[in-house]
Each structure stands twice: as structure tokens, then as C-alpha cells.
Length: 266
Image 1 (cartoon, rainbow, N blue to C red):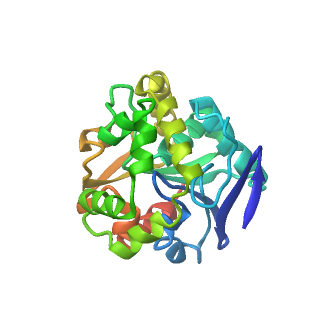
Image 2: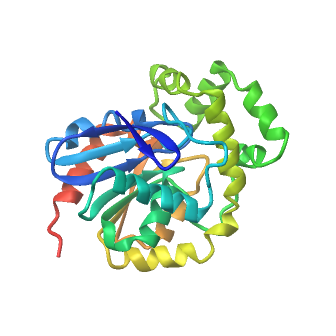
């Protein structure tokens, strides 16, 4: 389905009934990254997985606000447009982390629990090679222009342990020129220094909310040392997964999410 959220047209999956659970994907993904997880949860939860602005099938204006405040505002507009009035479960991965965690900082009363997978929310983080290239004017445009299906496939195979070529080709099929432009805008807006202050507020929020970090150990982009930095109550590692944990270990992740969400809440 498609939903108007501010100036964006957002494609999303909305499946099941129960406590609303919002899944926010990363780069270069779309809601498809959750396709192996949602069917196992939708019998007990309302699972909502949007394509983030400019990603997948979603459309965003060229001046979409990629600041921390802008991302938090977008997620809050999305929650409002969905008619959600009760606290929700939040599940984030990669780029979806700053979107969702910024929202959690600004709207903790709307948060029931949070699950974090391989993402960044630390001011001392240094972007990986591609992040540094994308952040560089002209160089980023050149890198995006030269990205081919074969090069894209080689990189995702290198950075994952269990992604199949079919999964990667499905992801690449949604990589459009508009998405490439959004990637450049987002990374150029996301100087890690911008997390300063926000990271401290997030730890304060997570100290009051049920929280879980699921971390793939073989992530060439984000060191495992950042897994412990969110202040989550529990951190669990997946020893044989690369960066794309939701797609590489969907059955195990779905089972862990079900257990976590079923735990009694005060």
C-alpha cells in the first residue's frame, strides 16, 4: 500500500493484528529486507515495514530533511498517518537506526520497546569506505554512476555471510537514480558528530524501556564494539552472520523477536 506522509509517498507493508511493530530498514534496502521475518510475527503483531523516503518504492522530495530532527519528524508523521495511538515496538537496522532512534529520543512516550541491529548512533563513529566516498562531493556521484549490478553483488556478498545472489538481485532491482541521490543526501547530512547529545539521550530512554540489541559479528562496516554502546538491557551476537542480519538469519531473528515481544511488560 502507499501512504502520503508529509511530502513523501511511502510504500509500506502493513500485515497482521496486535501490538503495532515498526520495522525500519537500512541502505541499500527496502521493506523487502523484512520479508523473511514478518510472516512469522504477523499472527501475533501488527507488522509495519515502510520503504524509507527515497528508498525502494517510496518517493521523497529532493529537499527531504535528513537531519536528526527531520528523521524523527518523518517517523512521527508516519506513525500518525497510520493511526497508531498506543506505544509501539520499534525494530531498526542500518540507516533505519538513526531514523527510528532519533524518533525514540523525541517521543519516548510512544515507544513500547526497541530492537536494534547493526546500526550507528555514536558520535565517535568513522564512516566506512563507501560512506566516506558518498559524503565527498563529485566523488560520491561518480561512485553511484559507476555502480553496476555485478559490482553491487560482489560487495554485498563480501559484506554478508548468507545472502544469496537472488536476494541481492532483488535488492538491486529497486536501486533507482532517485534512491542513489537519496543515499548521497543522507550520508552527507549524517556527520557522526551530529549524534553528540542524541546518543546520551537515547541511553536515558533505553534505561526505561525494554531493549534488545541483535548484532551480526561479521559486519565489515560497523565494529561490534558499538553494539554495547546503546545502553540496551540485552545484547546478543550472531556469530555467523554478516551485516544483513534480518535477511541472513530471518528464522532465528523472528523467533527471538517473538520471545522478546512476549515478555511481560510493566
